[in-house]
Length: 423
Image (cartoon, rainbow, N blue to C red; front, side, top):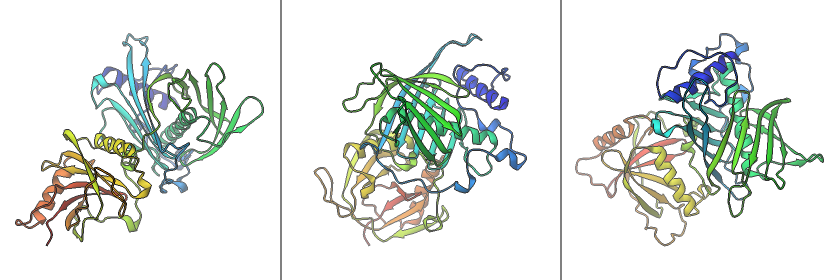
């Protein structure tokens, strides 16, 4: 466990100083707050015993559960602040900004950043069912903590993240979210079968007049997380804590909630780095170009950006807010596609109603027609530009497009679609 503690300290120090080269590891001791350890620094397991951990490999890579609202909420977004005090080595105090998102029951994403150091100095956890990825500050590619070849450090990090995630959900959704049972001793208990951590026991001491809510998360009698919620965040319908104090094996910190949005609902692309695919869903090689018989006959509404964007995450958030505002649940077949300009920048969100759905005011009539499409990984640098060049070279020079190209999420895959004029 010493290696894990040292890695935690190194990750925090790198974020504190904003540099790539972290100082030598510090000796064991209490850590007031630290970012997650970087699994890239962990030794690769050399024998099967090192792979023993809380994650059952036989359960891995299954599809996530379908989104299931909790108390009418399809998802949740929480923006918070963690004030890190001055350290004994003289490092000045600073603040971490957190953004936590959920689509219930098993999609979540946690971003932790120091905004003054720029976008590269942030960590990220993305959970999609029984898969969990970690992106460390300064890295470009995430590490999958639930991969079959995981190390013992990976497995422990995945377990602790799942436990912390459960504690936050319990505090933010109380008394909903789990099947709580009164123990008769002033506490409540619940058992969950987490897709990553396995069976977890939750114990809660409900808030009284002091608005103090305590949550413990245990696995096989081992206390993984102790969370205490304080105060009350002003909300018209939910009883929400204003802040939480969280204690795990390695960390103790207090997070103050600055914004809680119970109306949030997000697309899968925000959580899945590599969504699982079945053979039937595999779109084939990325160079495959095929003609779509007709663009679907679906009413649509265009929401333009003030300026072109290149950040897919920001575009996805904009689409999610639009869908929530318009009260269009993805389950009914409504979705959003992302309009591109000739430089592969995002210029607008096109909200599309489910086929056959009556169009409310503000939606335009369908514009069906033929199109060319190519598969693409929009997270890869330069991929969208390459896709537009591929489609442009595949279409006839005499062809005219009735509309700009757009990025479409199709199942677990992404495509760039170029509408064509009718033959």
